[in-house]
Image 1: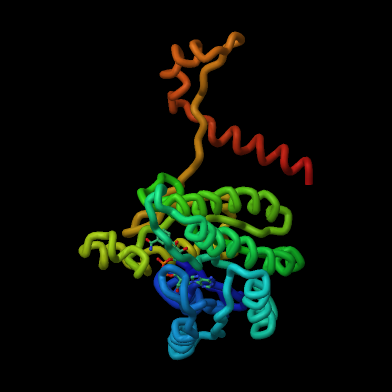
Image 2: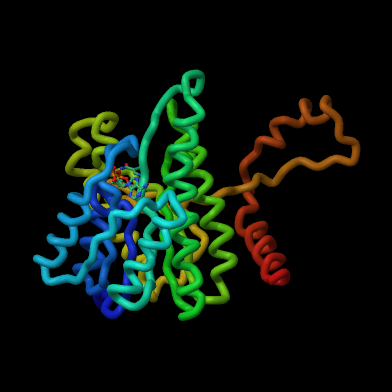
Length: 297
Ligand code: NAD
């Protein structure tokens, strides 16, 4: 089995000072990528800042014989996002891989959620992914090569109590991934998303203690590495990953129910058919949507 290597490639990993991002950065660097380790170094709720976490990861990569530089810029501001990509260009001359991973939590049941808590979470996850991608995209287009991995979450795909802000952000990244995959296709820019479950400071208070080993961060990064590799042709997909299991997650539409005389009562009376899942239409609808978009480009 030939090893997937990243020699000559430059990767930017946001939020790489801790948890999942740290693990992604270490794996990509171990396999030859030059890595920008970005991390603001704040608390789980996004408050505060420190250069410590990014510096530690850079030091570890260098100790292991790899190449890396630190960035403590904030993904959620246009200047911060530009500075992250500029760090890659200044240090290594290009950017081939972008892993949008930085994230924060402001959990609160919906009745108590403040506007500030909603906005802060969307700012880092959605706006941050948009801004850093926006800074990297022209360079990827220019070189007709790019690999972008966004970080969604099961909370976004399936819902989770106390996380309307976070779930909104994480499902938003699915839409972002799907459309960016269509727009990046001509320039060989592949865009996918992961929905991980892993033991980090973000989840250790909610996951059972026995998950620490089984759901370790190094069981997520191999998928990120594959999606970041030039041999990966897949784009626009979302993958559930954790505990050694990887699965495609897809949005599907049921076969539906059709009438020429639609009314509230007719809908009520045919609810079972409307709710039916099989045979789902995802692949065909997806292909049609993609074909019609490509015609517009
Ligand atoms: P983590 O808190 O260990 O890592 C997130 C990192 O992002 C932190 O180091 C933090 O300093 C950094 N960060 C936060 N805001 C930033 C900003 N504005 N600019 C730059 N860096 C910033 O948590 P984690 O579990 O490793 O989470 C990584 C990503 O994975 C997040 O997007 C998270 O939502 C997602 N995720 C994690 C899990 C899980 O099970 N751990 C599940 C689903 C999704």
